[in-house]
Image (tube, rainbow, N blue to C red):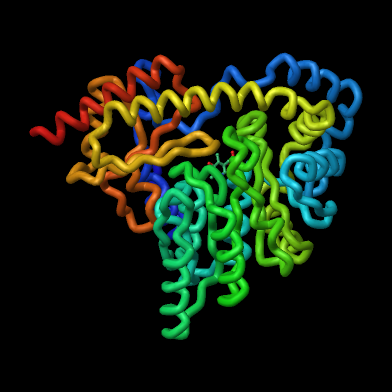
Length: 404
Ligand SMILES: *Cc1c(COP(=O)(O)O)cnc(C)c1O
């Protein structure tokens, strides 16, 4: 056998090390109740509609859909996507401002490649989305974390940190935020903080990356979730979106909305990675958007997720120790739990697993691996009964741990 270690690049070794550190081996065990995944409920996938659309694509657009296409994206899809974003998110831009990506994960990756050099300062929420964190990690930046509360990133603490950095002659390059129904914490940045954050981006001259993966998956509509992108007048914000949580993650369709100059600097990075995103999938999604499949389905999905969220909140409220802080998301897929106890949730996971329940320990969502007593709970994938049962079991495991 060849010893491939002798051939691997330094970057390859480094990236393998940072990503693998957080891989949990038993997360996909089907015999347990899992709050660990980040998956939509598969019963919400419009399988029949997509089947018919796929046939239609092959019949009417076969030559284009199976052909190479421009890196930027298929123009029919971009047109339908922009209409959709305008109707549902108030985002009004032209095709100059769009880049279609292979999942929004690729968007984060190419933004990091285009804008972050080794040693640059990247600001993230504490906690933040692990897959984005890893995409930035691969660039070897210096991270600065800003804690969250029920209203998202504590922007006043960010300001303190920015002032301190400035006094040392240092400067933030980019800030990454999941502004609405955050992963992992489920919190939504308040409208005042959105404005404040944008002012800070102006004053301290950094780019703001807004990941809006859940902006269209909101069940309590009373909280405003205006994208920061829409408040921005000076091109500070790079907006990232995805069809993963509103249509199907398997299509791998994401997008960047940004000023033309930003799109122009991302496009070569994308071309190097994969030439272009699947044209076939873009045609399928274009017809799905045109036929308003998402808009027709999404209210049913929201009703289902809202029920599941309510069940999880109620069961946590009635069973978890009184010291627990947990979030009450207005949308998205996750509830965040901080036990405020001397419990290491990574160690506790083995016990929970032996009782038939899984979650994700919170540590991996911190750039500095803090958050020992935190966990992320997914409420979209398990059934309502599993949620009740599983949260009760988890509460028992925690209480037993406290009494030993
Ligand atoms: C699920 C999720 C995404 C979606 O990623 P895709 O690559 O588009 O599937 C993006 N950002 C966050 C914060 C997410 O939770």
